Length: 440
Ligand code: GDP
Ligand code: MG
Image (cartoon, rainbow, N blue to C red; front, side):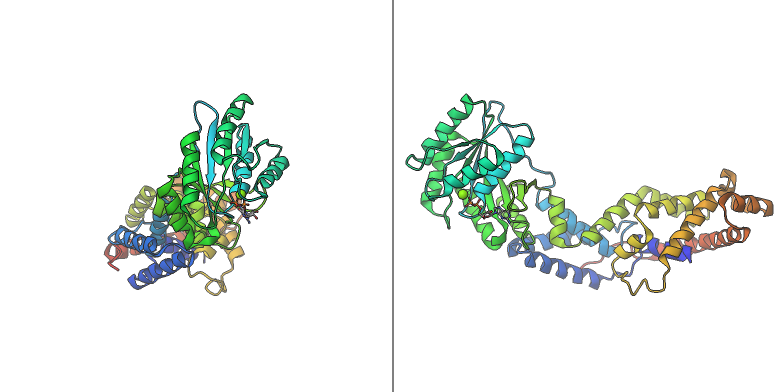
């Protein structure tokens, strides 16, 4: 029936689920595997699991979550922390032109990202100039010119006979004279880190003093990305990272590792080959992607939104003292409804698979919920507060008002009384139940 289903949902969401310590331990193992599979650096994973375990032990279980959900929530929170809770933006100089310098290994996506970034910045009102400083690869200058042409954004180049330092310096003067408020310097890369490259990049850095040195990292390179990011940051100092090729099947573990190891924020992510495929980086989205738990996480969000803790405590007190009214009941129904259609809510609960839901007529339940709501809304304030006054003539009036029958009104009144008793029993039981997560 309706109230059973409702209670079952609430029960699961109110920390009364049967998730044991063993389940929690198992869960940490799963999360560890998921992180390693996503190519997160082993040391980072180890530290992370230790931190999460420490936080999870002895935590009060939120009224609205099962211990299992609570652990996932902690994992989620800590991962977001690890990646920088806030979205990190690029900074602009108060005295234009602002200079961005793109660095990274060959093939990481510097040239493409330079174009994408110029495109994105133009959308934000900037007047960018692209600068071709890769004088080593024969087609590099041409490649940037093609990108600039596609976007209609000017490209500054001086061929390949001058040094990158001289080209960079000249480009700043050029930008100033042409009212460009942003200069994006595309530099050369190598297949591996080498001293020659680093020296050259340092020279450019020292002579043009970029406001942002953005390290472009190929997310497909997995573990290597960490070493690359670490070396670049130690030798050159970077202000932020751009993670490219996240449109591939990489799960993005490089994102966690590179941030954790360098401490430098990821500012943008490349999501494809097109020049419009660059997005600001949002830590929480990356976390969902890595955990691959979109549904569970969104359920937790919804549960938290829907049942704010204070209200839950208030409600529980009412249930205990049998002061639970139809108004409270209505509110509980609204809370569950806020979480989405019943079918969706039930499906999001771990363990609630098709088999568990077999024989449950969800459409029917949904309709029942709507009828119940209609009946309660046809009651007067007085009736809702004290259902004992609802006599025969009142029942007739309520049935007529809600487009239901007297039998249905009777049925609801009866199950409401039963529910009140049941709530009392449940909350009495809960007083003796577990409130803390054990050690694991
Ligand atoms: P550079 O050597 O660092 O300048 O790298 P390029 O900009 O030339 O990019 C190398 C290759 O990676 C090119 O084929 C790009 O199209 C591709 N690429 C760059 N960013 C992305 C991305 O976000 N997604 C995908 N799928 N490909 C990308
Ligand atoms: Mg290039």
